[in-house]
Length: 443
Image 1: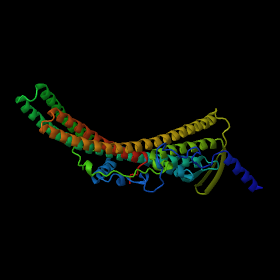
Image 2: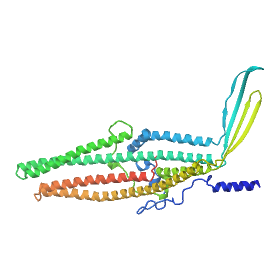
Image 3: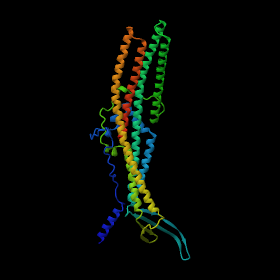
Image 4: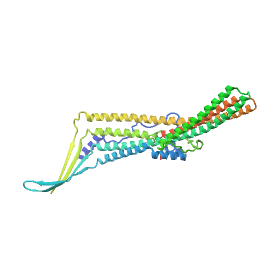
């Protein structure tokens, strides 16, 4: 008979939804999350499974990333947040253990019949039996909160890696652009000198010379603007590194090796790889256990209070109590309704975060592929314009064309070279975004 009662009680409690463990909702599968034009690959060597050192192979860049991860103030602050969550989780586990209090006391007693010193050594214990899952759900909720804070910290780490890499690649592009522009400025200065001589010889008019001088001045101003941009990017990087503004040691754009195979893995990997997606799910898990805890409040609390005291004799006592909420001005029901609404809201946020993650991967991959294709075409354009300029110079030396044609050819070549460098940066930035959007590893 007792076994039957226990069995029926277990069925009743499980049907009330106070003991169930969180499981991912069925509508969250991740299938096809990357969208159109992205081929999913289950190979273990995808970008989603690589650390930043395997993607960003430049040793100087790796040193900068390591320094930023070590010094960044936001990361250090998040470490304390994680510690707080760890303490909260430990406290929720200790709630299952009985509590003890020890309060010895004594004094000098004076009465009509006797006087003397008296004492008592009481020890009290209170223990709540978690028959209806209140403390269990609180512990599970605290565990989800701890995992969520760890995900927040990891997301911040990935953001720092991406930011440092992005600024570093920007510096390399600006360095190369400065070299090209500086070299072009020298050529234009020589062009102005030659045109001045041609004007004195009556072979060039004043308007053409003035136009050439204006273009030369504009290019020289561009050199100054590039130097300023380099300093600004260095300062931004120094801020992340938590150091005073200074020169950033770096390599060259030509020495960089960007990943050739942009394999993104399967979209379901985002559920376990990307920290902000995990954070959204652990937030959902918290509210799941919040609903279960709100349900458990409808059931009675069972407590055992025990005490023992020694005051010349040993006096034990044991008291059990049951407290069943009957009417609390609608507060218990309202708390359950609020918990359910919070869960549904967290579910919508989780779904939205997954859609955003899939879109990020699609955009980053498209940026990489498009920039790579543009760079290939731009290389052919630069080669063609270089030949065109050389041919124009040859024609001018033979008297078959004017010096203005040479000027136009030089300007077209400079524009194409600048666009070629910007295409390289666009591809490098796409790799950085792809690393981040796939939940790039830090270690």
